[in-house]
Image (cartoon, rainbow, N blue to C red; front, side, top):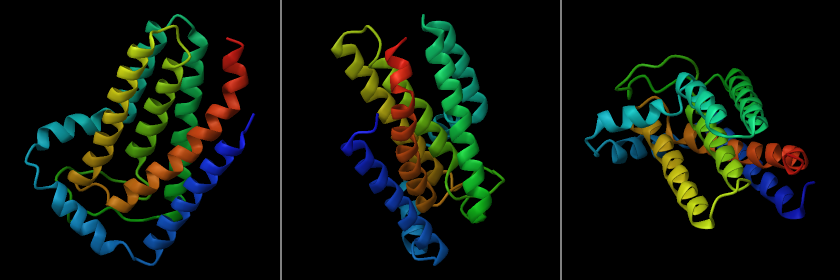
Length: 200
């Protein structure tokens, strides 16, 4: 059941995504994108960023999905996580084919092909780890443990987003758009399965 707060949240994040999309179309954010890359590239730990960005790659997400299914006792949560991952992947690929933005090849320190807008790693990371946070809060854990896991996963999501800019495989505007559309999607998905989750 969608609440007024959740509807407002979806509208806000969708509006922010549309704002980013319009800005990218008219090349409004180019200087901001370049300056953001220059700023974060001053942190000389490329090995760390490469490791972090891998944690939102399709292969790693698939591996993590298998581990989650094995670890949690209620396998239906694993099914929901799998469906969530498929949906966000398809959404990202669809949006990339709509906007057809080329990657910042002149900024790359590691090669990636495909289109740039919005960031797929960002969308996958937020949808996957964000839904894991939701699952954690449905589990029989102490509040302290839930908060610890939540903070750790939020930090991971932030680092994944930053890694895409550092590695030069995405502009900052790609990442921000990925964040906004993923948060809108995540609210819709969670609200859509909430009734089902409550019956588990």
